[in-house]
Image 1 (cartoon, rainbow, N blue to C red):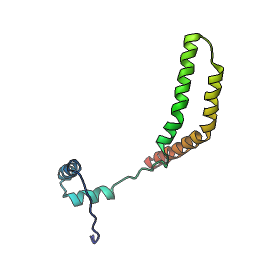
Image 2 (spheres, rainbow, N blue to C red):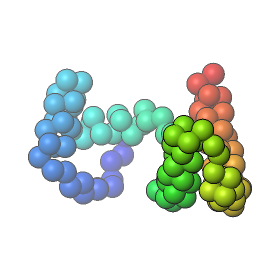
Image 3 (cartoon, helix red, strand yellow):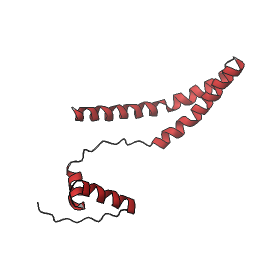
Image 4 (tube, rainbow, N blue to C red):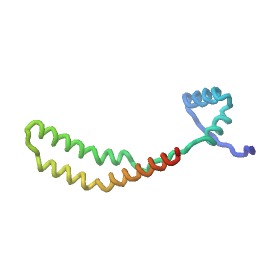
Length: 116
């Protein structure tokens, strides 16, 4: 193996200690261990999604739905105005939620096919 490339990797004390311990446990030096990890890595596809965005979209809807539910239990009557508002908000973001679900399903199917 012709080792001609150098990389510099900065670690904090904890990371360095973990690397050193893992390498020693594998009876390798740190360079051999990192090289071994790279060669045997199974890359997992990542979702190109902004989870915080979806949480921010869903949070007010969940809050309103919770209020609707609480009022129904307290008054035994449905606040249709607020429910319509919740449904309208949900319908507005539904295309994005469906897209996120489809992406997640594709990634899951790809991971499952790699395991076979």
